[in-house]
Image (cartoon, rainbow, N blue to C red; front, side, top):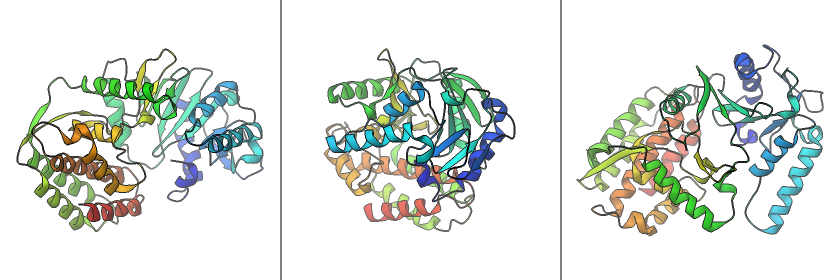
Length: 372
């Protein structure tokens, strides 16, 4: 999510310095030094809303290389040239391309620092140390960062990045050296190979799948969602959510299914390849028990890409694997994925403070109503 999108839903330019000051000691910032200033004013770092990057006026080679990797795009040669041209201008004339400035004392490491705001977190890359620090945005519930930290501290496998240091609402890890996400790699055969490998790695996390009744599982997801929604300020559409789940239960076969450890946001942007070609899976904040269909659908059927749920359903029906899973009808598989997606979206909603996220969630509910 770009800063420009965050500004439509939150007071980002107040949240940013408040967050940095709260975690100043953890981040290596002088306490109380973070403050935003207007466009054109002198600052330590500068905010480019389009790049979603906060960098020094003369960023280091490591910072530039990271952003060039992040903005390696697919598409026509003209689009690639346009993105490359803007990136070059934004990294050369940082101050004139910035919308705001950020004052904060970084102990002399300013040029080698990149601050990268995320949906619910803020990441500070310190290329001098080779470490990225992740902190929860000020005022946001800690449901996801707490879950991710706990999972990663208790999971000892090579493809889950190790946490170096952690605290309440924060953790640090080693920067993936010369890493690239699959979303930025244009060798189709290599990407397909790494997708298959990643699914196998994810499957290896589950030692013993848990068997449950398919209909009772969807009913359990319904109850979880209704309990979460009862805690959300300003939400008054629980009946709609209950009705959607009831329709999904009707579409689900009366059969047993297996639940496994699921990533939850298993898309190419979260599958990285390091400088040695090793696969690393990042962003475990939505990890929990789900069907194996869910992560497969996210990876191969573009679960949350543009096009909507109707197009996603058609992709699931056309997908060879999901249409031929032994013992299950494709409509049952689809109902299970949609029920898990509705729970995902509900949990996403309650991970925002106050009434934030309501409009987006209600739009999703309307989409579910017209799809099912």
